[in-house]
Length: 194
Image 1 (cartoon, rainbow, N blue to C red):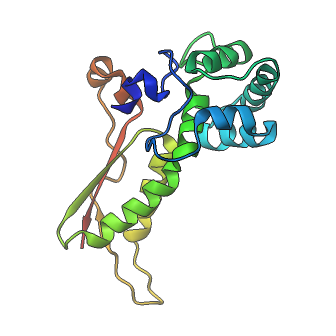
Image 2: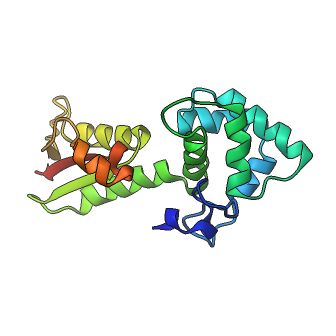
């Protein structure tokens, strides 16, 4: 829902302020990250949280652009990235950079890990849990937490906490991807509390 509101600054497809905060009461915005972080720190964010292949190029282009003028809108940032990282096919060059900034600002990976562990703790025996993730970093966290909770530890005489109901994640059908473009990267995993 937030992604569709241009004033929230999540999408490079609509002109909006560089914000990207899920919680607008927090201090750190995308504008702060883009205009104040070092090139090295930006690069690490783009590489680790966006899994962007051309992370160095993206970080360098942003630092060069902000020397001339503060980057304040989503379309300005997308333009800077598009000039630095050209792609003839596939996703827009700004997609992974925007994703990385959003994940960083909102501490999304930490939130997923903490929330999922708490959800498993409060789940009643026989209760089922399903988690829908939208990129590989999220899915990896879900997969690892589910897998670890489904293991028994012999030396400690610990029984598994969960039973995996999906060995591999469920993914959208080609028809669903055509109807809902945002579903293309979705992965759904299920487990049951023992």
